[in-house]
Amino acid sequence: MEEKVLPPSRHLYLHSDVDEISVGELIRQIDEINDYDAKIDELTMMSMQNVYIEAEGDISMSIQRQPIILHVNTCGGSIRDGLALINAIKGSGTPIYSLVEGKAMSMGFVIALSCEYRMGYINSSWMYHNISSYGWGDLENQKRNIKEMDVLIDILDDIIVENTYLEKEDLDPIKKLREDWYMRGWEAMDLGIVDELMDAEMN
Image (cartoon, rainbow, N blue to C red; front, side, top):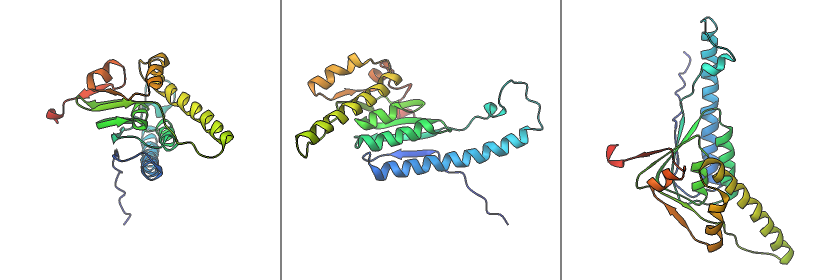
């Protein structure tokens, strides 16, 4: 008898620092869900070949995958590991929604923004600030590190501007003052950071 394969859970959790371990596990889970959904898509398309569909274009367009929910509660962490997770989110054939359960700070803020649909609670917190790094090596090596940091800042700011109502001019003062910019639910909604707010008492 063929063993029945159970569908993978669509609830993923970023409840720790953004690092190689947490990101590696999340990317593995995203890949697993996409592999499962691709097999379901194939079976669905085979069954639909015998059904008349009054629509133009690829038959696959009529197949809608159930989204992955990425539960976020993190103070942030590694930028490069965070970008690896963002690449996996953007490359996922299955849509990924974020749900900020408590906090999405620093790199966690950018990760939550990168999802197709963003949710949070009224009392959740979002936080943006400039990136930080420690200098090491000789002067030339530190100059190269500063140049790389400038590149990473531009990448992160581009993601923020692309996914919110914010412009780079809104972010520059925060970086210059070296401040942490904290936002609660309704402010995040007004800025286009979150698409839907929920009241924890209703769940």
